[in-house]
Image (cartoon, rainbow, N blue to C red; front, side):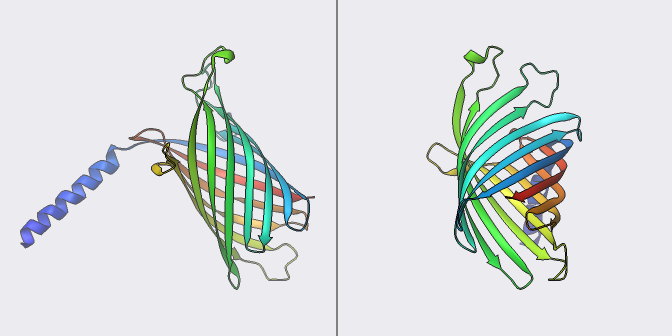
Length: 242
């Protein structure tokens, strides 16, 4: 029985390695900058506007621009609900493509839970996106362009660890998160991997109004059944509360 078990083990390993090496990976480097502007409406409700400017080849080539207004409701310290709208301009990596911009509109809902620890916390949020994307290939005549509908679910797990002393003038935290994107079929069932984001960085509270989040992020994006895009980027977000 041992030789047979060894044979099947080797066969399984060979199959796994062949599957891994059959995948093709395209790699780019990028910079993501964003500003999150919060406008309190009451003790539990606020408006937020997100502005994202994303590039690849560092600052040379536009990758994406996002405008994302939203309404936030926080019924308790460790639970929050958000809902909003996103307008995305997605740029073709080929700067000679014409047309180069693919528009997307989506409506989304999100719930977040936080588990506080002594000097750290775990938080998780789940976001459901309802996406209207321009159908490919894009038409030169904008009046001929059409949109198709799809849904996607996103799950993020974040670990936040305090690094500075509790009374530090500028509190500093370690931030680590992983986020998985999964496409949904017309019946609303997750069925296909779309993206994975992994982030490692720092969060500094510069003042009562301003918080800065910055660090390294790696995105793995499925382009087809055998092709993936790996984007290594520096991600910086400025939070400002009015």
